[in-house]
Image (cartoon, one colour):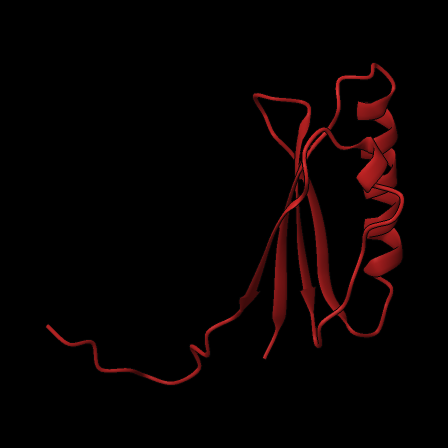
Length: 95
């Protein structure tokens, strides 16, 4: 089963923070995607609000990430933990 984290980050208003945060997230993605237990580590930037970012982290087991990013945020991370559903077998859906 894959362990998935969805993290929503909102950058502070300091002019240098968006490019710094963006660079750190790209760097983190490149590093974490090389890890054996990482299934995928995807970073996204909102198309309407350049201060809003989303990370989708997919691991074979639970993992953590934080220290550099927290000082660059205006509000706390919105961290959501998910476990992917097993869709490998047919299922009867009640009507």
